[in-house]
Each structure stands twice: as C-alpha cells, then as structure tokens.
Length: 112
Image (cartoon, rainbow, N blue to C red; front, side):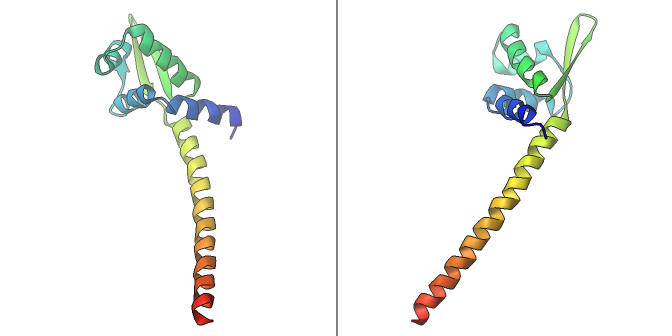
C-alpha cells in the first residue's frame, strides 16, 4: 500500500469528529446538512472534515440537485485494517516468543 495514502487514512481517522461522521455514515448515506446536526457544527466546519475524509478515500460525495450527499467508502478503511492486522499478527507472534523464552528461563531458575 502507498505510504502516503495510509498516512492520509490514519490522519483522517485520528480526529474524533471525523470518526463520528463515519459512524453516522455507517448506517447509510446522509446529506451534509444532516451530518451537521449530531455534531452541533456549522456546515463549513463539517465540510472541512469531509474534505479530509474525501482525500483519504473514506467517503464519497455526490451532488444531486441542490443537495450534497455523502456515503462511506470501505476500500480505504479495509486497507488500513489490513495494515493493522498484519502488524497485530507480527507483534502477537513476537510477544509469544518472549513469553516462551521467559517461561523457559523461569523453569531453569527453579530447577537450579
């Protein structure tokens, strides 16, 4: 995966408001106006957050008539999850090795 894209994804996810927006979108498409309501924010403030999410590939925006609709896109989130899962397995394996080593060392200490 492109390192810059991953940086944009994690940067976008680092903000609680943007994570909240994605949680709202998890139940379906919303208008920008609808997204403003649960956050008690102005439309320009929400639009700034939406631009960050859009650049990260986490949402899709579509204009229909006078309304702007926003929906979640799963591909970028799936890529971030895959990266996390890879390193989770890596660290779990290494921690298991450390635990095994310590258990062997403890067993030798008690035998002496």
